[in-house]
Image 1 (cartoon, one colour):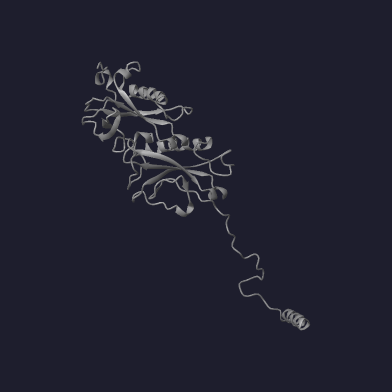
Image 2: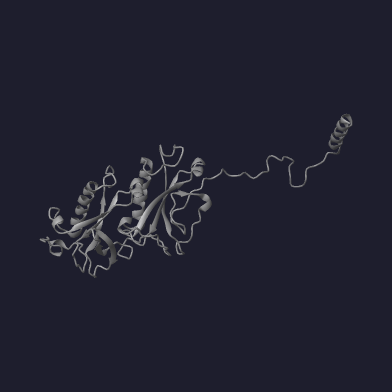
Length: 301
């Protein structure tokens, strides 16, 4: 059987050669030069200026990436997308919060968010997060980091994310509902602040947002009473500048509330501390910005 099969195959080959078959019309008979080239595979990179209906996640997966129109309902907005470089880009996995490389990315996001919003995001009811690719995406070549901003219901009492229907671009460039202002703070039985309810500055209030103090990178997160002193000192500096009084007398005129971000934010690289004026029995009905020594006199009681 093998001999007959070989002979028949040979006969077929001879017959094919004898008939001189031509290639089909429109071809040249070379099957290796007519294929369309396929481009090099690309790495997924999220887009800046996009909004998302999901809450913030530290890791961004391609499978869950679903940007929406900022005019529609959303809870997160990407204000910038940066790129890890140098030693960070050569790492086996994405930089983690607490690393120098992640801190550099956070600083870039902080700066870009300021430009996008029109002012430091900490002057408003906002929160900034830095997201990185999944380990699988990093292995495939992704080296980006994403800067995301979320509006919160408040920043003083662990507020929740707010669903928006407009972009945050330029939202802090002028006075508006997002900007931090005046509060009617109340005390608990231990004489510590219990609530900070936001009110119009024309209404009676005893507390007002004064600005942001930038803590040194080497300062540790406060965990015991003595750790707070540098934060008070920094916020008194902010308070004096805000009201327009001397550094030497500001402590005799007002107390301060100092509000760093949470421990996770501190680890990520957030060294901006929100500072508030606080006069426990105050009954102000105007902003104290630029009020000077007359608007905020030395307290003798």
